Length: 105
Figure 1: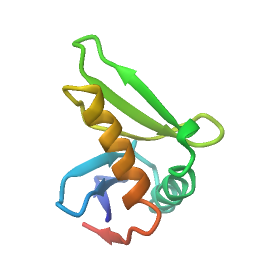
Figure 2: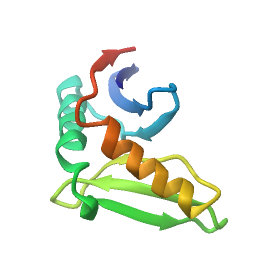
Figure 3: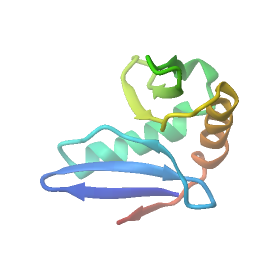
Figure 4: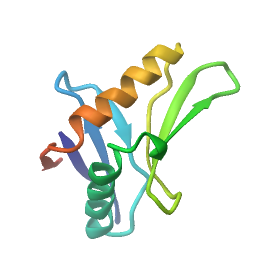
């Protein structure tokens, strides 16, 4: 499920797995429609493995970004202790995002 949240004048969203764990967080958007477009972009692009940017942080932990076809980051993961955790997170986005409902929180 996508949760659309308002923080002051800005909006952002998170994608949660069935167990309620946040698997993806967005940037801040100036408008609600911008955030909704971001959600649609995640749904559209999550099926393309090339849209996932796998990264290793300086502390050795793993994380990923999902990018739109123009290369803009639309969502970022949490930090994972191992590479397999990151890959499981990517698979979770691929599985959960396409048909996810949007709830305003």
